[in-house]
Image 1 (spheres, one colour):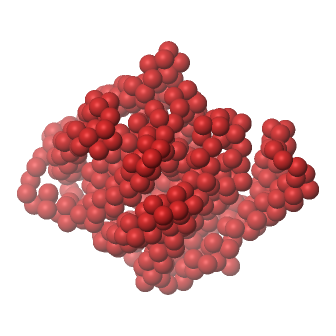
Image 2: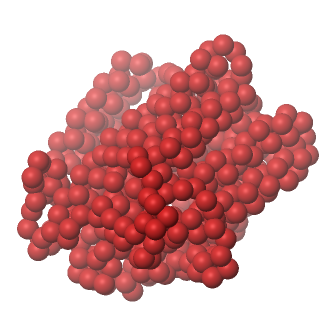
Image 3: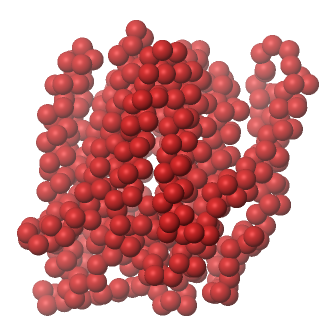
Length: 507
């Protein structure tokens, strides 16, 4: 793609759809994002299950300590520079991109340095010298993500096809490199080498695709402007780091050591897929929210319908792991993972519930308000320290799960208060009841069947039959209870499809 000239770069909202087609573009972008993320996450999930089966709890616990630190610091350095860039309307977009890129790269360098400094501390804390080399080997990640900043340009333009093609490089190359290394017996290092190759390819592709020159500009006024928006996002990342490290540490430093860290890593890895629909929708609708941020009625409709869509995935996913998580462990992963069952079910329930209103922060950030999410994150981290960690120390896995569910209740209370302030017509209870009905309709027959056939261990054939019954019931019940919303979505996705812009949220 040709780059802009030095006098150019003025695209304003270049590539942005006209207002009349904004709904259709957003819906089609959501479908494209869903297809991408579903494919990418399916690949990574299969890789993760293969690694789990081949490496065992101790090796996965070792990798869990490293990646929890690295990935959370990556999230910590992602302080919303991309979202601030999407909001701006500078005359010269190339210059503004270079300013934002300069801030992002500086933060990325600081993040890489922080990971390197933490490496010897982790090795000492867990008394395992292998953590030193593994942690240093992933210290490049914050810089690698910063160098993929050209993706922001296509995000701002709502050019989701090009954006997802660039983002698809990391999961695809990761699997293509990691799986052969795992099968060849490289061990835990396969999980480090694969992503390294993938990020190198993604950085190169982003540089080639960028319409603007990758020349970072560090201008004091721009740095202050971006960081003023971003510091609450940093606090959010810091809270996530505290929770992620806290849950690994409370189990990893227990009597079972790295094996226990492996159990909580498995539970956290699988249950994180509960938020994938939210990520798809939140990413898709953010540029649309920016365009209609002053119209409360449209924002309320967008919030309600986007949450109904995401809860169609989150609630069933959480319920499915609670119902069939023991089967996944017993029939696929093996008996050595049996202690992870309670953690898997408990985190699945907590994570699914926490998706209620999950994308609320995008509505505040689109208005330039990033502080409310920092408040929610601080409450999450504080309640985790007061409830989940003492619960784990006193009563083990069951105490941790109870504390984690109580943390979710605290988070939802804060979230509800903020959402009601911005969007007074939104009702969390109504959204939750609507999402729970299809799950309940699908689950009750399965529980009835289990009760009728109760007689010791369930054979694999019965487990597969129950899963098929549950899935079919869920599909039928969702079609029954959400027919109107699904029909509207299909109207946007049809070629040339566009529904009445005055459509309102269903009762």
